Amino acid sequence: MKSRRQSCTDSGSESSELDSKSPEKYETATRRRMAANARERKRMQGLNTAFDRLRKVVPQWGQDKKLSKYETLQMALSYIMALNRILTDAKRPGTCHRQWLELQFDCVQPENYPCLIYDPAGEQDYLHSSFSYQLDEHQVHT
DNA sequence: TAGGCCATCTGGTCCT
DNA sequence: AGGACCAGATGGCCTA
Image 1: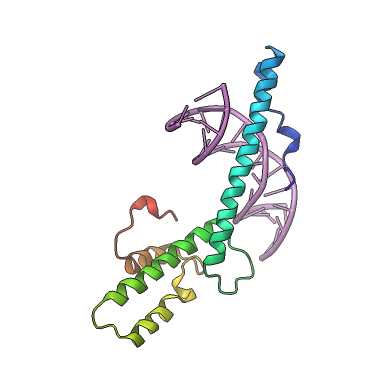
Image 2: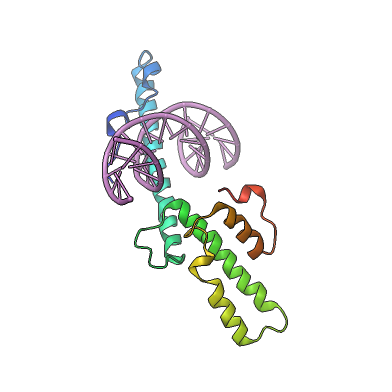
């Protein structure tokens, strides 16, 4: 993609102080800055590729609009917890095959995904009711 | 037009 | 020294 800020970048802003110093130092600093920018772009592209891959495996329920990064993470979290619930409930003694199938159907429903119907308060309830351990404070930012 | 989302640049920090 | 990672700042694009 075309750079959005070509005007003020890729030329290295460390230049102001270095202008008064040797041209070699200025050149080196500029080259380093440009290389760092390129690396950062590549790193962020890698991150975005990872987000795209995550979007593909996370439920979307016909949402025509692509999930934002934040929504993708929230959805992944909810999805993992729903799957976890399926597994833990299936391990309970006395769960027959039919009940287990119904459980799966119930768990993987849009209403079980707070990121689609966003309600911060409800999300906390959901987290605590559907997961077998208490999430640390830092793990759930709303 | 405001607000949300995003890409990019940048400087700081940590690590090798 | 240089690379990886991060967070803040900035500005563009899109939608309601």
